[in-house]
Length: 307
Ligand SMILES: Nc1ncnc2c1ncn2[C@@H]1O[C@H](COP(=O)(O)OP(=O)(O)OP(=O)(O)O)[C@@H](O)[C@H]1O
Ligand SMILES: [Mg+2]
Image (cartoon, rainbow, N blue to C red; front, side, top):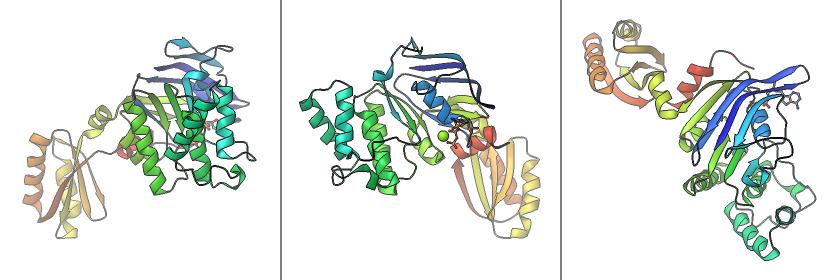
């Protein structure tokens, strides 16, 4: 369980965090999302004790994060930019860290070969890291984060720079970790991935928490259902848009690439009204119902400004 209350962090003249709140339930995967510069990496660095906050409180499994108190053994971190010993190979880097964690040689050996297999680095495992690609370095970083089997994982864009195959593999690894009961905080700009992985999200912007909830309730709050309509005569689209906008049950209407997108709250009562009204107005060629995506949610809560 992770609890952060009112975190502030200043770097010189920059207020990176201005009262950030975050709660991650035990055994859940939570997404930490927000625009560039919002403070995601700063938050993760504070939680992983790499950076000290100026004020605020953090507890990890009810243990307050204080200078000198080590919660590091409970935590595994994939940093935004992994710092690795470039002249070591992945295997010797892992061995080096296993030693720091006090693992026996025998224990380390089998754990390391399992991890190298899991992140698909077996072939390159004995070559120097300096020759690795960006994605390969991320894979070493994930293996390092998992080495000591921590209860809590803090993953800062763990999948950026990964090809689609290894990305899928990473997703599986993360979901497996969730099934094992780990508590996971993951930051990523790919909202589709976050939506697939996470139960809840914390959306932050400008150093503050904008909203924190389950994706399901945020979906509801954003306007739970979207109906997309394609008409046979494009010239009727504007008229259809204003007709639907005037309906009480409709929360939003927009147009996108030849489709009119209508948002309603209740699928049972509202969809028939929309379809009925629309087909009275014009010929409907195609209708489909889509879920509100995490992108819709993000744009609603953090779409306003940038940076
Ligand atoms: N070491 C530092 N020195 C000065 N400013 C910093 C430092 N680290 C972060 N900042 C500033 O703090 C703010 C938050 O940065 P942070 O890296 O936490 O954002 P982020 O949400 O992770 O962004 P991104 O999506 O680009 O990774 C930014 O304005 C950034 O410039
Ligand atoms: Mg970042």
